[in-house]
Image: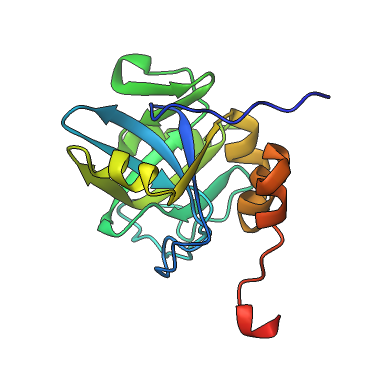
Length: 190
Protein backbone atom coordinates (compact mmCIF):
# COMPACT_ATOMS: atom_id res chain seq x y z
CA UNK A 1 0.00 0.00 0.00
CA UNK A 2 1.55 3.30 -1.02
CA UNK A 3 1.33 6.20 1.37
CA UNK A 4 0.04 9.63 0.39
CA UNK A 5 2.86 12.13 -0.09
CA UNK A 6 2.84 15.07 2.32
CA UNK A 7 0.69 17.93 1.07
CA UNK A 8 2.58 21.09 0.28
CA UNK A 9 -0.29 23.58 0.08
CA UNK A 10 -2.30 25.42 2.68
CA UNK A 11 -5.83 24.79 1.47
CA UNK A 12 -9.23 23.50 2.52
CA UNK A 13 -9.02 19.81 3.37
CA UNK A 14 -5.36 19.85 4.41
CA UNK A 15 -4.40 18.67 7.88
CA UNK A 16 -2.05 20.80 9.95
CA UNK A 17 0.17 18.57 12.05
CA UNK A 18 1.70 20.42 15.01
CA UNK A 19 5.49 20.40 15.08
CA UNK A 20 7.20 19.67 18.42
CA UNK A 21 7.95 23.42 18.61
CA UNK A 22 4.31 24.08 19.53
CA UNK A 23 4.06 23.76 23.30
CA UNK A 24 0.69 25.48 23.92
CA UNK A 25 -1.50 22.93 25.73
CA UNK A 26 -4.39 22.84 23.28
CA UNK A 27 -2.18 22.80 20.20
CA UNK A 28 0.51 20.45 21.56
CA UNK A 29 0.54 17.43 19.22
CA UNK A 30 -2.67 18.67 17.62
CA UNK A 31 -4.06 17.81 14.21
CA UNK A 32 -6.19 20.56 12.66
CA UNK A 33 -8.41 20.16 9.62
CA UNK A 34 -8.35 23.35 7.51
CA UNK A 35 -12.02 24.07 6.73
CA UNK A 36 -11.49 27.37 4.93
CA UNK A 37 -8.39 29.15 3.65
CA UNK A 38 -8.72 32.48 1.85
CA UNK A 39 -6.67 35.68 1.50
CA UNK A 40 -8.82 37.10 4.34
CA UNK A 41 -7.84 34.36 6.79
CA UNK A 42 -8.36 30.73 7.69
CA UNK A 43 -10.23 28.54 10.11
CA UNK A 44 -10.00 24.93 11.11
CA UNK A 45 -11.02 22.35 13.66
CA UNK A 46 -8.78 20.36 15.97
CA UNK A 47 -9.80 16.77 15.24
CA UNK A 48 -7.66 14.78 17.67
CA UNK A 49 -8.54 16.21 21.09
CA UNK A 50 -11.52 14.34 22.61
CA UNK A 51 -13.74 16.11 25.13
CA UNK A 52 -16.53 14.99 27.41
CA UNK A 53 -19.60 17.19 27.28
CA UNK A 54 -23.10 16.64 28.59
CA UNK A 55 -25.53 18.42 26.31
CA UNK A 56 -28.81 19.87 27.62
CA UNK A 57 -31.97 17.90 26.71
CA UNK A 58 -33.29 20.77 24.56
CA UNK A 59 -30.27 20.28 22.29
CA UNK A 60 -30.23 16.50 22.28
CA UNK A 61 -33.28 14.85 23.81
CA UNK A 62 -31.40 11.57 24.06
CA UNK A 63 -29.27 13.04 26.85
CA UNK A 64 -25.64 12.13 27.12
CA UNK A 65 -23.98 11.68 23.73
CA UNK A 66 -23.13 8.00 23.61
CA UNK A 67 -23.45 6.79 20.07
CA UNK A 68 -20.92 4.59 18.25
CA UNK A 69 -20.79 6.97 15.27
CA UNK A 70 -20.62 10.22 17.24
CA UNK A 71 -17.36 11.56 18.63
CA UNK A 72 -16.78 14.79 20.56
CA UNK A 73 -13.75 17.00 19.91
CA UNK A 74 -12.33 20.26 21.18
CA UNK A 75 -12.26 22.19 17.90
CA UNK A 76 -10.17 25.10 19.17
CA UNK A 77 -9.82 27.98 21.61
CA UNK A 78 -12.34 30.30 19.94
CA UNK A 79 -16.04 30.15 20.86
CA UNK A 80 -15.95 26.80 22.65
CA UNK A 81 -19.67 27.11 23.36
CA UNK A 82 -20.28 26.84 19.61
CA UNK A 83 -20.67 23.36 18.15
CA UNK A 84 -19.66 22.58 14.57
CA UNK A 85 -20.49 19.34 12.80
CA UNK A 86 -18.11 17.37 10.62
CA UNK A 87 -19.90 14.41 9.07
CA UNK A 88 -20.18 11.91 6.23
CA UNK A 89 -23.83 12.59 5.30
CA UNK A 90 -24.58 13.50 1.69
CA UNK A 91 -27.96 14.93 2.76
CA UNK A 92 -28.50 18.69 2.80
CA UNK A 93 -25.43 19.40 0.67
CA UNK A 94 -26.90 22.85 -0.01
CA UNK A 95 -26.44 23.61 3.71
CA UNK A 96 -22.98 22.08 4.09
CA UNK A 97 -19.45 22.67 2.86
CA UNK A 98 -17.63 19.74 1.25
CA UNK A 99 -14.20 19.68 2.90
CA UNK A 100 -12.69 16.51 1.35
CA UNK A 101 -14.41 13.65 -0.51
CA UNK A 102 -17.23 12.27 1.67
CA UNK A 103 -16.60 14.77 4.52
CA UNK A 104 -18.85 17.77 5.08
CA UNK A 105 -18.99 20.68 7.52
CA UNK A 106 -22.33 22.03 8.64
CA UNK A 107 -25.84 21.04 9.46
CA UNK A 108 -28.37 22.33 11.93
CA UNK A 109 -29.73 20.94 15.18
CA UNK A 110 -32.54 19.12 13.38
CA UNK A 111 -29.99 17.40 11.12
CA UNK A 112 -27.98 16.31 14.17
CA UNK A 113 -31.02 15.00 16.02
CA UNK A 114 -32.37 13.14 12.98
CA UNK A 115 -28.94 11.68 12.19
CA UNK A 116 -28.45 10.36 15.71
CA UNK A 117 -31.93 8.84 15.75
CA UNK A 118 -31.43 7.16 12.38
CA UNK A 119 -30.33 3.54 12.02
CA UNK A 120 -28.04 4.74 9.21
CA UNK A 121 -26.41 7.50 11.24
CA UNK A 122 -23.47 9.06 9.39
CA UNK A 123 -20.10 9.39 11.10
CA UNK A 124 -20.20 12.60 13.16
CA UNK A 125 -17.56 14.71 14.87
CA UNK A 126 -19.11 17.32 17.15
CA UNK A 127 -16.42 19.98 17.47
CA UNK A 128 -16.65 22.57 20.22
CA UNK A 129 -14.93 25.78 19.23
CA UNK A 130 -12.65 26.42 16.31
CA UNK A 131 -9.17 27.67 15.48
CA UNK A 132 -8.78 30.80 13.38
CA UNK A 133 -6.06 32.86 11.75
CA UNK A 134 -6.18 36.39 10.38
CA UNK A 135 -4.76 37.43 6.99
CA UNK A 136 -1.32 35.88 6.50
CA UNK A 137 -1.06 34.53 10.06
CA UNK A 138 -1.27 30.83 9.16
CA UNK A 139 1.22 31.31 6.32
CA UNK A 140 3.69 32.90 8.77
CA UNK A 141 3.28 30.01 11.24
CA UNK A 142 3.80 27.50 8.43
CA UNK A 143 6.93 29.27 7.16
CA UNK A 144 8.33 29.25 10.72
CA UNK A 145 7.98 25.44 10.67
CA UNK A 146 5.24 25.23 13.29
CA UNK A 147 2.99 23.06 11.10
CA UNK A 148 3.49 20.10 8.80
CA UNK A 149 0.91 19.48 6.07
CA UNK A 150 -0.84 16.24 5.14
CA UNK A 151 -3.91 15.58 2.96
CA UNK A 152 -7.02 14.66 4.92
CA UNK A 153 -9.30 11.72 4.22
CA UNK A 154 -12.55 10.43 5.63
CA UNK A 155 -10.66 7.45 7.07
CA UNK A 156 -8.11 9.59 8.89
CA UNK A 157 -10.82 11.78 10.42
CA UNK A 158 -13.31 9.11 11.48
CA UNK A 159 -11.42 5.83 11.79
CA UNK A 160 -8.08 6.81 13.33
CA UNK A 161 -8.23 6.87 17.14
CA UNK A 162 -7.75 10.53 18.15
CA UNK A 163 -5.02 9.73 20.67
CA UNK A 164 -2.98 8.05 17.90
CA UNK A 165 -3.73 10.46 15.04
CA UNK A 166 -0.69 12.77 15.44
CA UNK A 167 1.81 9.89 15.60
CA UNK A 168 0.02 7.88 12.91
CA UNK A 169 0.12 10.69 10.35
CA UNK A 170 3.78 11.50 11.06
CA UNK A 171 4.67 7.82 10.60
CA UNK A 172 2.80 7.79 7.27
CA UNK A 173 4.81 10.82 6.19
CA UNK A 174 8.01 8.82 6.77
CA UNK A 175 11.60 10.02 6.99
CA UNK A 176 12.30 12.72 9.58
CA UNK A 177 8.58 12.93 10.38
CA UNK A 178 8.50 9.28 11.50
CA UNK A 179 11.33 10.11 13.92
CA UNK A 180 9.37 13.09 15.27
CA UNK A 181 6.43 10.76 15.97
CA UNK A 182 8.56 9.03 18.61
CA UNK A 183 9.05 12.17 20.74
CA UNK A 184 7.51 11.55 24.20
CA UNK A 185 4.93 13.96 25.63
CA UNK A 186 7.15 14.67 28.61
CA UNK A 187 10.78 15.19 27.62
CA UNK A 188 11.90 14.94 31.27
CA UNK A 189 11.15 11.20 31.01
CA UNK A 190 13.84 10.85 28.35
